[in-house]
Length: 197
Length: 399
Image 1: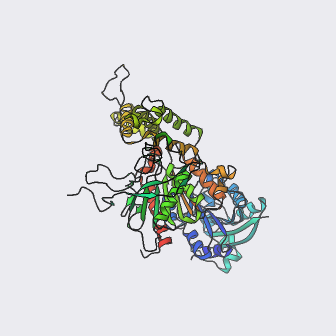
Image 2: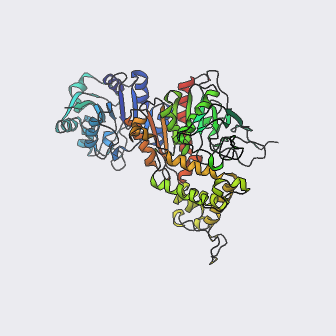
Image 3: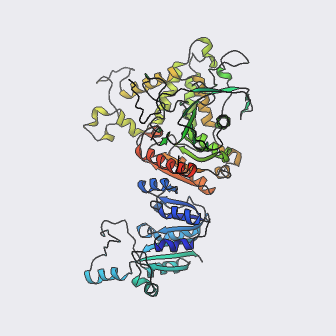
């Protein structure tokens, strides 16, 4: 499994209840079901992804995250996941608050725009960063709310959210001591483990 | 030379009639001392008896869900597009059971049957049957067939309500509950349409208080009207515009033609059939009235109206599902206004609240409530994907 997913797995207790917001094709949840025997539910809007979830035995609800999560009870899940979806939301701050209402803990991963490559794109080329990892042009991208590790730290402080753990990996989902030392500069993907304060 | 394509059809099938002698106590307090069920099965029950699927029919359905009764049949069973070798409900993998529900007119004990106590047709004396009663009778059928646990119970509309009832009443007896275009209970609008249908039938002079068979007639006009109003609620505005707007389809955008095709090309300035839609509804009503029993129609609409599994749980549907340990798949259709997506979403939310494993899909489809019977690719593929996984989970990779 990818290193970021291995990190997520370690934060999820066996047999616990996991809600994945924007679960994609359900591969992560299917793996967590096998490895950790979790009781998992995913939310997704893409029909092809939803069909793949069904084929993999992942429970999936067709639901648009931008229309809110009011149908979920408070404290109804142990962990709520938001993997690589934060930057595509209409209102990311509201959704992070909702995650921690529904789940006792939250895990958020997002592409770190504070990474040196992004900074270099802006600094030297004067252009919005485009890479193999984040291949969209600014005018045609689902990613409307990019942020940096520093920005997200600030959101957590302002939102009274406790950061239980924070780690970063590169676009191949590998970690290193250097990235741990300078996460906002070297990390390409940030992974946060959160709880209510 | 057979016209039936054997590659994806279950082919020629024949129903069997099973007799049950143990009295069935009904929710109304009445009981049926003995009854018969007409049943069709497709595919083979595996040695572990673990691959059985129950199909529950809707208001006008019966036991004939797939295949043909004779080489000359014009149409196959009512869900043939989903049941067969290699289809979504794959008879190469699953043993599929479908029955005509009690009170039906497809051969199971119902109003047209002879009441052994009187020697006459039951007619209006046939007791009111509820969804719960149907499921109780289906349980006995299951025991008769030697099936311990259904791999899945599947149904659309009123059939979906039976699926929900299975999950509530017999949680140990099914692995998967698949309810399509269903609702947790009817709304006042739903009941209103049913009441119009019932009034049409009972006010027909040929109804004779339900004893029309003894008079050698049947309430044809009433049944026609009932079906016409029902049929309108199964279609969507957009599907009717498309269906009856062909004359203008080439000239204007599909939604701009309003489905006002004329029958003869000009207005009659009378109260005859002017528009195609009128002709279509009359035809549908007439066809239906010739093959469906009026008392059964009344019973079916009451079963719909009465369905509300939350009544035993202080109105809280999540509590009703507390003991359910099957997995759920719910699907709805975007233009269904009889049981709109919100109603299925409501069930999904109650199941989530109860902590159950549920999947919910809202299928984009123009065809209204009727969509659940049609081969809409996303819908059929989702069912196929779900059941493929269910088969692997329950029966292993081997069979």
